[in-house]
Amino acid sequence: MIEQDTHRQLQSVGDDAVTPDVGRHVMLINQGSANGVKVGMAVIGQEGGSPTALVGVVDQVDPASARVLLISDFSSEVSAKVYHEGTVADGVIQGQFQRGGWLRLEEVDRAVPLAAGDQVVTAGLTAQMDLDLPHGAIPRNISIGVVERVWTEGYRQFAEMRPYLAPDQVRYAWVILSHDE
Image (cartoon, rainbow, N blue to C red; front, side, top):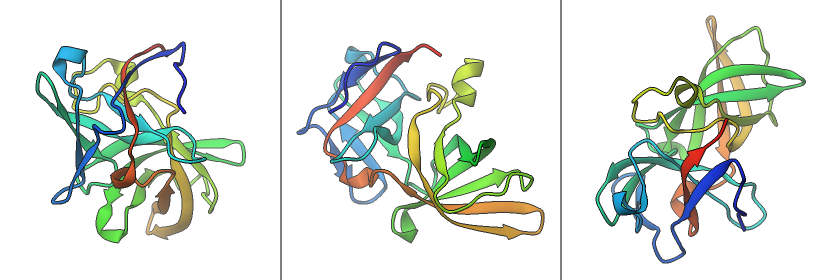
């Protein structure tokens, strides 16, 4: 169970509030603007023995509910950091629900060789700059997943990764209302 973090204010969404949408990789939650939820806020979850991980980002808000774009949706892009043997590389995560919910890591510097098993977390780049962007409130260092396969195309390096959580299977979720970096 996720415990209240002294660096983050969380809003529980509850187990009966998460409703996946079959047509897109989004879910509806029963917390909205009346509860302080805003577009761009990160939504995290935890299932079984998995680490607390990013599920998606709020992309639409009503007073009593909100829609969350899951990280597995093809239109989802999140800045990320990859940890490989003491080095860190920046990249961008894109959803790949058409490939079974896997994620694709792009824009990674080839000078940092990646390998299966490397851990990936949010970079929090837009949150640090305090920009008014759709994904502007995603804090850094939220677990996303693990690299499974790496390949190169020309001067570019890519990785296929498995998220720690299957976003469309999450039953318990929390919206990060505020965070201290």
